[in-house]
Length: 257
Figure (tube, helix red, strand yellow):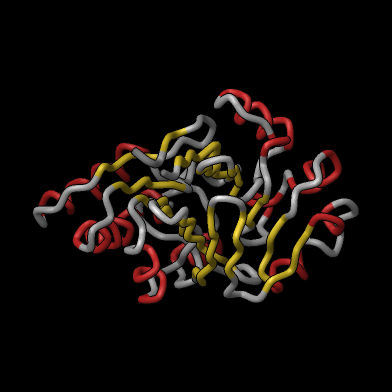
């Protein structure tokens, strides 16, 4: 059985911890090495137990801890080649740990298999991941401007998923961000709104996904209650039910039950 936690989820940093059997991996390392180590210690483990790190894309809130982690630990860090080419070029220690893959790749790591798929975002290349231990499957897809058929089909293979509920459209439109940034977030390669996240959650619930966690909420343009209520209300209106929760920007949240 897979156990997964968000250690951090939001615009200030992202990191997801996944374990099954004797295998422990991370998806992203968008906080400092020290912060990630402390979060893992709180769960009774350590970076020294992490066998591999899988990177979604090269934006700093997903990779900023990797240089120091690579300096202190001998952990393979997996990138699709467009993000690798952007992220690794200025690193000293990360170059030693980074593994360059095609956009679609599959990697067996101990007791789990990790498979990538495309997620639309304004990065060099953004990936979602499916983690499968032969009995249980977990998926993650954040930083997505819109939901593709490919992405949705990958996620319905999972028992539990982490997906993006980045912003409330009215909060964003009436908020302090400059217009160009609002347009970027609202674009097909920006971030997913609560409204569109609710539609995706209904599709997932209708196709057998059992638990959904809403992640990567914007501190400035969303509230956990707004995200939860919009998704929950649409589920209820469609007669659907999942175990629904909201990830925290600074505290570990269990994603699988």
